[in-house]
Length: 483
Image (cartoon, rainbow, N blue to C red; front, side):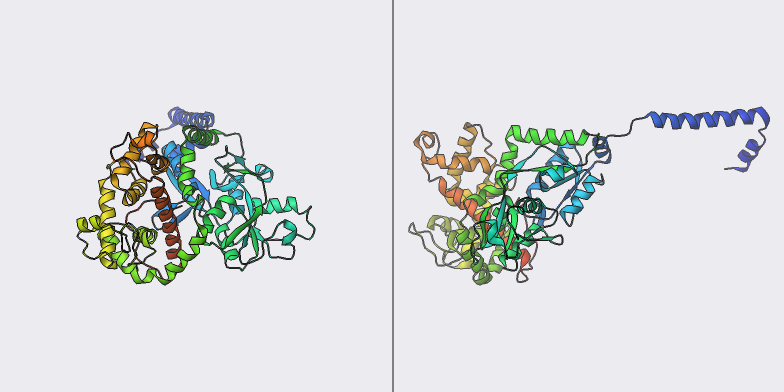
């Protein structure tokens, strides 16, 4: 403050000074009163004001994990969509165990938990659950190298381990009164994926896991087997703090209900799990052995080719395995041959002189797949763009376009693989193929073809992430929900 200003203030005396003090105090009191009367922001208003939705989760293949293409998992996709629904950014926070998640929600330290949480009576006393978005069963899992237990009584004397504070531990406590001497260990230091891995590696005899997690993890560990169900169907839902403020809770319920009514929730779940439904788990063992034994011979060729054509080398390798099991001299009854099983016409079109030369074949297959990806309408997004291109690699671009047309005629979305694959088999039926440009096709084959590649691709991602043998460059382009 300037000196003359200070002096002018100090000259004020008597009634004028008292009046200024009274006015100042009155303004301050009025401000406090006004603030006291102003309603506090609701939880939803706080989220909108901050521009960020904080969501707690846990690391698991079915919830949230960081894969080669970045964050993935069903819970991640749902939470990301909910944040977009609110018009805010998603801040996903991974917690070490279930108890940390439930504690923070119960204490109001977090707004939402999207962690594959089963709705149980015990948990409902601690947190508020949204409407359910999925159903699962609890299953007893063992290693197929061991004797299959037929009931809980067969577990007595064995090493049964479950996650601490899990619905599985709650279920065992309910059932323990029926089975004398049933004992188990509750582990709070590892996650569900790690626990299933311990069973696969025969470190632990048995565990209990949700059916969706078992389905996914059997892809990586084909030795895992389900002995029996431990529960009836149970609901999965998001957890939120209890309290009078239901603003964010209501918004979450509205969001989930809208997804259900539109059919989008079912499509999301199918996209994450449908390629595993009919997967040949016996074949997984052979595939994993070939990853170790045969893939190293061609790994650098896949990687160089993928970089050249802006592809994901694991996707290219998965396609080659589906085509030939990485056999450069493979020949089919129809005359296609080589590691990428190119037809003579396609090889000539691509300038491939020797189809049984692994490097030429992989280069030709990679270049052809890139052409198919680029040929599809520009508005089709990933990962659907890649899955449709792979179907075209198998059955031909024209037949895929015919299937897209049928999908649109039947009220579906021709830009979504999950919907086009339902209509590809119709190309076998005269009622439908007579309306198309390219006519009859064995439409079931590309469906099985693409879904197998997706499964091989998922296994390769997992193998590369968990193997010291493959610490390679990051992937390039496929922004996909791997699982």
